Image (cartoon, rainbow, N blue to C red):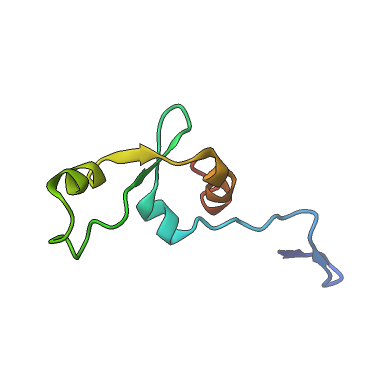
Length: 80
């Protein structure tokens, strides 16, 4: 925010920087085509009761649903 000669703050000349959400940038990755990738949940603990097939399928990375895209774009404004 800049001040002019009269000491009044001028909001027109400078814009605030939008910060990227630090948790989102660690958890999501953007592809070259603009899709957002995410990892599955429920694979860190209590693995004894989960089947081998279920744990194997939780390893894969999937594309984020389109209903969550707008929220993630606001959390990571400079990734797109």
